[in-house]
Length: 405
Image (cartoon, rainbow, N blue to C red; front, side):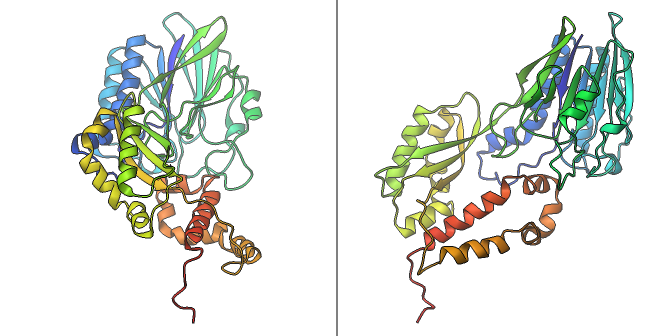
């Protein structure tokens, strides 16, 4: 048996905030989710797999464009011509309640409904496979769905599809589960979706997040792709393959002894020549040990200098297969002590300011947009917000307050 496990295609991702890209690269970026998805379907045909599993968030938004719907239909039709079944579950971005499909998918496509159901396939060699899963009926599924999954059926193989996240005990909006619950079903494989970084939660039987097929932001770095899964002596063996048209990366540049933006530009150009990427890579660069005056630091922080550098060094950037989406100076940490700010008062204030309720109120309706909501609810964001506030305060340390008499 051989199949593909993919998830989180996120067709129609808008890639906001990248309007400064060269036009040819911007076109590549905006097409990248489609390019990556095509590699999944190409691999299915090249490997002549028995079926394809797509574990949620095929579309980035509930309101799918005509282009995205037509594209997916065409890809499904390619697989139909090769008699390859496709099993689809919709996730929190493309949940069933907002599906407005006006053209029926080809006959090889099975869309799992809002209740856990099981699709049974008989393969060309006579083996039988049960595939159990469901689609999100609305954007959030707060209850544990595992009780509704059957135990291993009387088939040669049983596979679970689940778009969700491991339960944390609070704010579990995405079909929360535990690994022990998955193992209790005695399935041969769990095809997971929702988390955009590929992860192995269990080796045998494999319980895997495939990750998304194309990174969409700087917090989605590294290789992206899907799994080709093959049976071997009673076990299923997953093999990752890359699909991303572009990659995202973070990097650090040591700017020791540099005191001007001109010197920074020279060192950055040398760094580009020494750190070429294998494919187009959108890079966020952190600059350490930089000593600039206030005017130059402001120019760097507000992106003015970067904009000029990108326009004057397009050739070097293209040769390195890199485009800088940000250049951020790392300010040396300073102790927030009296008289400017008493540490005890800072700690007390931080405890009352950096609360979930205050952060939610600050973001307001922005947090209702699915992509921003996913980012906002990440466990690391609270620490990030606090760190950024501390950095701003550190920069203000020692500056004279004009309002003080």
